[in-house]
Image 1 (cartoon, rainbow, N blue to C red):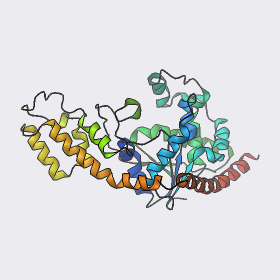
Image 2 (cartoon, rainbow, N blue to C red; image 1 turned 180 degrees about the vertical axis):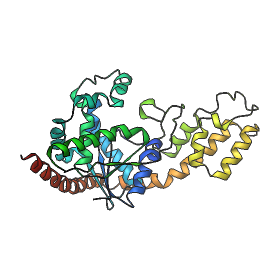
Image 3 (tube, rainbow, N blue to C red; image 1 turned 30 degrees about the vertical axis):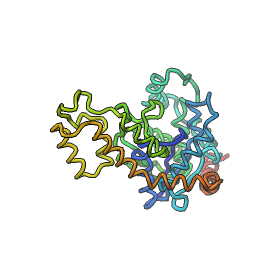
Length: 326
């Protein structure tokens, strides 16, 4: 149990380069050393998308297919849907009874999301209480560590506080999960903003090589370089942020020198980037096509994962009910 970690992802459909560098690459490494529970957070998606659920099933399929193609291995990790393990909901209900509303209202993302997602009514109990559901996702498996970025530490702290309060009231049942800090490089989208499906600026992992090339050739570069003859500055070039992730160091240094000396134009620079990205993603895309041809594969992986996850969650809930004297 000391090596168990839990992490989840909301089903948003096909994943993009930001998901790969922010989550999947870490998951793939973690499963080599930890007992990993990776789940599709479909109930969490309802906290903001409760009015438009039609695409969730397809999104789950596309997302898990990306996981498998990128090396998240069901032989090494438990891969499952949150909603197929009812103990998540049972523990969520119990923990909601002891969680002060003030803890939820001070959640840093609560007001931020309400301000940014103005087209949606987020004045729901589910949205306010999603940190309790998140705590249930983690605590029901008694995970000792949770992989998070620095910006997610406040969310994990709520989980720790809820575990502490339960243990104080009813006796020691839950460990307080510690943060397993992960490095997540910032991946900019085609327009210079954070890569996001909602911004329509993403390179999707499962798209074709030609689609990737076309998108990258339209990517924003150095806004201050007006003409081909003008010297450029890679440090202020949006496209060059991807060079650091995909282009070999020696070639990257050549591009820097040539850009600053106006010996290479932005079009040439983006061609180099496009080929590097396409080449890097080629094995994944081939594997994805291969897996997609296996009918029922994703469903079978999720069903097997749910059985494994529920077996662990049931044991935890037996302890919880005993502690509560229910």
